[in-house]
Amino acid sequence: MVENSLTGKLRFTLKNQFGEPDYGNHFDCQITDFKDAWTNHPDPDIDLCAMPIAEVQKLTVEKTSKEPFYLPLDSGIMPSQSDIDGLIGMEEVKMIGYPNGLWDELNNMPLYRKGVLASNYKFDWNGKKEFIVDLSVFPGSSGSPVFLLDESGYKTKKATIFGSTRFKLLGIVYKTFLHHISGGIYSANIPTNQQNIAVSSMPNNLGLVIKSERLLDFEQIFKQKLESN
Image 1 (tube, rainbow, N blue to C red):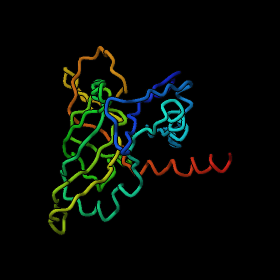
Image 2: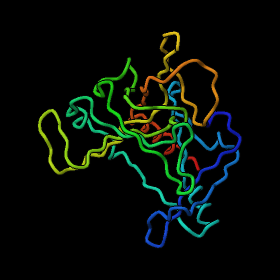
Image 3: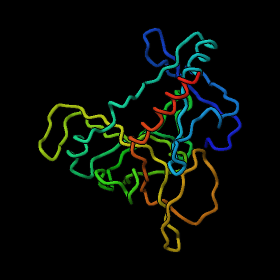
């Protein structure tokens, strides 16, 4: 959780001599005034924030003499209108994250889960740039990216595509739906860290996801910051 955080730690797997991840060899970058290192989305109702990593990358090199390994995701992997128009519904999706704070700590690896689109991605859920996935979402899943990934072909409304890979960033998880033992259903924010919560409820295996296009709203903010420096 970024809000009101005083300090934070970002762990990066380091690159080996071939530019590949050197699993088991990582660097913990300690950041003071953690909440101030992030930029909130300009719309306070959108639960997204972003951090430029140039300084983090520089610090990692200074401390380890090695580059941190990461795979940049640019706007090219966001679904185009043509991609969206071709969706047939209930596509399988993948999520990468840390449910209940679980992860491979030794190798610095998250967990991978899969599910399906539960709402029609072509429409904005209840008028917001959001959609729902049928996928096990637990505390720790907030901020997890949701991908459309087909590696050996896929179907669209117009055709069946053989032997091609489709890889699109659909959005970022930020809420789950909980079912009260008494029968009520409500949506709840997902804490990013594992916590003990005394509530008699259980997850409905549904996640609320912010569409990836809202990430583009940060571009102008960071551009203005660069121009002012």
